Length: 139
Image (cartoon, rainbow, N blue to C red; front, side, top):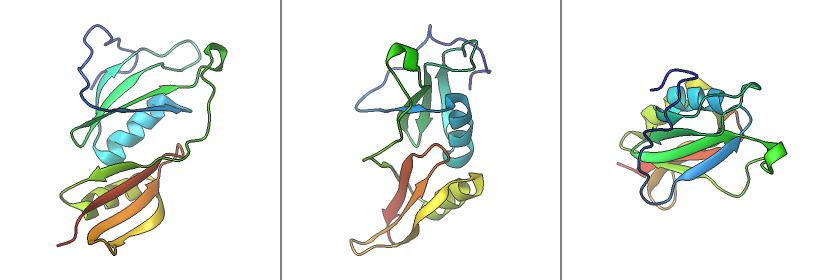
């Protein structure tokens, strides 16, 4: 993990496939939450500006990339509520992932349970309004 305020833009990890890019109100706090809740590893951060905002943080979560940055309305990137998507974590031990996220402060939207399609599955909302689902085939 990079230290707060440390520039790491010179060495940017390669991203393969599709990566979610979240604009949130408080990217540094979101990164810290995702580290606690989902075991995220921060691999890149642009230093914060004089207003405490950062334009880019790159995380690895469960072998995937999630990138985030603060809103910059003066540059055409206003903060908007997240809508119409869910970030899904397909994991080996959904109960452990679920419990860690709830203990970190994620709000339960759909309790973790065995669903009609055969997976153990549930949905959470993080403190930044982003929906997450956790699931795995039921044993």
